[in-house]
Amino acid sequence: MDVYRCEHVMDLFSVKETKAREIIKQLNDELKEKGYITVAGRVPTEYFHERTKIPKNKDESQ
Image 1: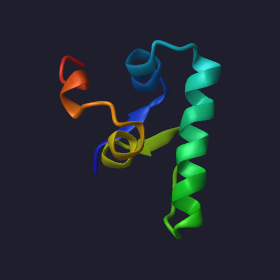
Image 2: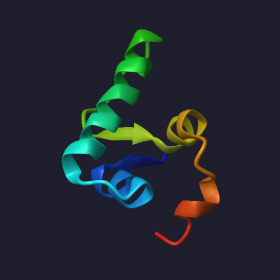
Image 3: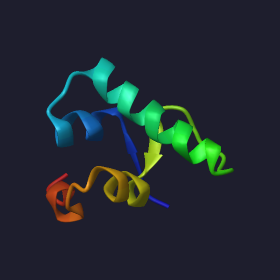
């Protein structure tokens, strides 16, 4: 499973580290509510793109 870390979210949203970490935490909290086990500071790429509606091909240059 591919995951995004803070640096990826910073690049995709053009935000600073604090905001990127907030976004990751929010997405991980949603996954926890659905019964998934999460790892702090990382979010599955598939779920990230599903929730943010950012096209997956936007991150291919990374």
